[in-house]
Length: 69
Image (tube, rainbow, N blue to C red; front, side, top):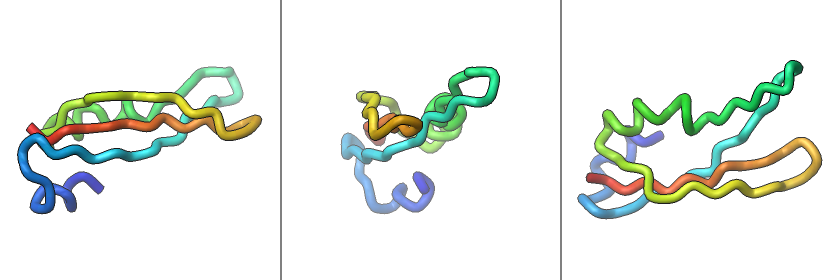
């Protein structure tokens, strides 16, 4: 996903993605943004903003904004 954007974005340009937030049977919250953080950093992006958006009963999304450094 981010690897494909490398040639398209210049330094200082931003990309926004929506990631699901899941809760397992033990009520442990898993945020994909935490799982992807190191990978995204290694590609040359930094996190600018993060917002949680409640969609419905069992679905919440995390909206992430990254900037190419």
